[in-house]
Length: 104
Image: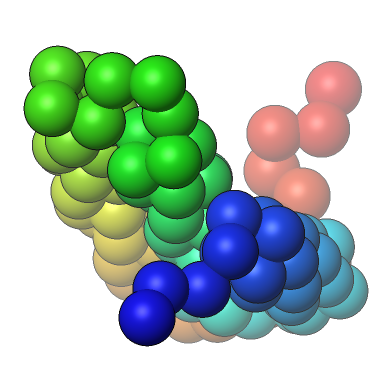
């Protein structure tokens, strides 16, 4: 027996809120990246839930959106970690409040 759509949407909203709180409230750049990844996973859960309970689940459109989103999330993680490593080599810290070199 499958859970109704509202259960998936509530779980997705909770994941998104946890990711948002982690991205906004943390000082470490790596924890901010983890929060952003959690928000992207919540969006992927929404795509899959709406595809599964949509009028044409045999069309695989939701799966294609999720695969594209996973590819974008992997690229975002690679670029984000490269930036964190580069700033760590220069500043010896990953704390977001100490990285103010871009302020004009």
